Image (cartoon, rainbow, N blue to C red):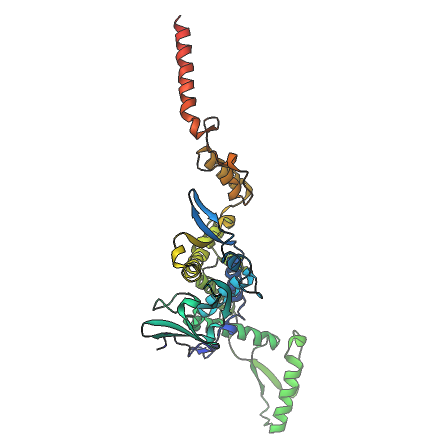
Length: 398
């Protein structure tokens, strides 16, 4: 039994009589930019395999899966390209699939991406399978990151769900292209008040003459001389009255909302935003509300498919997002200083936050603001100061 519905993946009509497909939707510059921003945002983050240790977590570089995620999922694809393609599939088709190639010891050795429109999800006797062009693959050998859906198994294509609005935006784009193709000239009629009735061949001749001299970008703003009592009367609604530009802008903003991308990231700077008061706050909002949900979907699916059952809870994959949260140099300095003054960060913690190498065991000591005293000596310092005050008091009473 199939649990997905691929019948409309190659095109969907809407009430605007426009066929909307994933590839055609990419011709909308705002949608293309949104997909690019999110896909590259995920692809650029460091992706590591970690293991739990006594004092937190440690990058597990010797794990067999480390290079699959961090460096090269297969001999032909970099980690960046793999994740970029993953996000493009999710943002357009709502699903990403990758076959897990394993060795004789059942360890993953390669991840092979599958075209989402060629994969069919099947449920048989309570078991999940994936039908691909290469054959049937059991669920434990297929990475399947699913977007928002209705059954908890298969994601729905955002393009299909938003086909109505995208159809309107595509129509407005085509209208604009046709408008300027015709030299920004709307349709009209030629009239003759003399009452002359033209023969069919004369009508065709007039049409050729008119279109040849007035249409196309090379004929913009040229003056046309009409003879024989001909008059030109424009018909149709001017684009301003039809709110052509407003429709284009509204469509662009709605696409940003569809993908939760701050408008300024795709070049829309004339609209107010609720993402924050500054660019830095908007970027943090982009991380929290756009990237993090996608990162969590990816992490959970990869954890349960590429690591052994005995490793779950101890070994896991994760993305390092600290770089996006750092802010400018001034904000970084203030944050690190505050954390070190309160004993939250050690020197090594601060160096790790900045993406730099630690300095060894001596960098693990934590300090507090009281003249930067090591935590393990705070009591000694307090006792010593109290002793000094007591001695001073005795001297003053003599």
